[in-house]
Length: 261
Length: 274
Image (cartoon, rainbow over all chains, first blue to last red; front, top):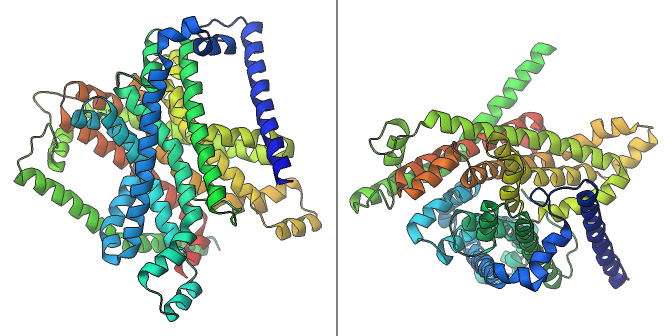
């Protein structure tokens, strides 16, 4: 039955996409919309799949550039974020000192820092990685902290009474308890990570889909821009689904999602 | 009667302020210390202002005219704040309005909710260059980008809030013969308030980001323009000045939203105390 419903969901989603493309095509051909205003879906896909056109754009180069930044920033922010959160919850003093700074930074529009990293690190892979990391890092830290703290008091009393060490307390109680929160944080971070990378590439890069988007904008090359948009969405969505899949695998017992702010 | 209720309102506001001071003086001290250390590090190690300007240097650029790069800060701040606030207000109004319409009609919800969740997981910011080509340079482009960045979190949170009503409560009011309108004004919307405000809080940051990125991509005014322009000339202090203003604007809006949250939901203050 479980399999049946996922299959139906997939069919539904494919149907949505097909209907969307059909409406898009219909609108373009009925109203004779010019290519530089709104390209038809076939023109857009042609940029990707017609070899003569696709060759000009070096898609593989740009996709791999963006993907490597997104993936590495994502992995680094997850690892460092969870580690820092555990440190924060481990020591009261540490949390008193560092927590206000983290909350402050979390509320800042970090994307605005992009040009600064450019001055510090120069063009290329590093500044983009740093921006994407910075944007994705704080939601994970804060969510993990909330999860580590949100343990039933009774449970804590019980394990204290049974003489559990602090390490055991974290390994057996706090960390498993925080998993739903961690995954909720990671889901926010996925989108943020892609966003940070794109803005980094907008501001300065010589390759990557964000760069290509800006480059095509200069030539009013709408089909290419839409192509970039679709590819970026595919990257974001596949990462998002991967996280969702991992969430199900890691917590088979959990079927409710954490709503967070 | 009215006098009592105004008195009550004052009490709520006073409670909020005193609680805010009591809970926040330590974090504020830490943040103050952070800036102090930054200032000291820059002074002691004599770091060039091209690499890392001290906080006072950034403020100096903001308030006093500089010989090399002279920005008309008032105009730029005005433009960005206008974009940000208009974007935020549109998002809040439309987002909540559309969420209510969507939840009102079950069929609409079935069709649109998956689409909203889908779009929310996309990098909306990538639309910015396309919007720029459609609308051209200027204020409305940046407002639209700011609007789009914040819109979906608000809609999704509001829908989640409107939906998360206890079944027993629904059964009760149905049994008592409440109209659909009453169901919304008395049950669903008050119940959704915490969700709506958490959506609005996400939205404040996102609107700032949208407005700034719009200015990064193309504009001749605004704080984003100053940041990009200073980057070209490798003039770091104005970048920091602009970042300070942006942060204050974003943080100020965040504080206003959470203040309104407490005004509208005084009962949350009571539950938090426990």
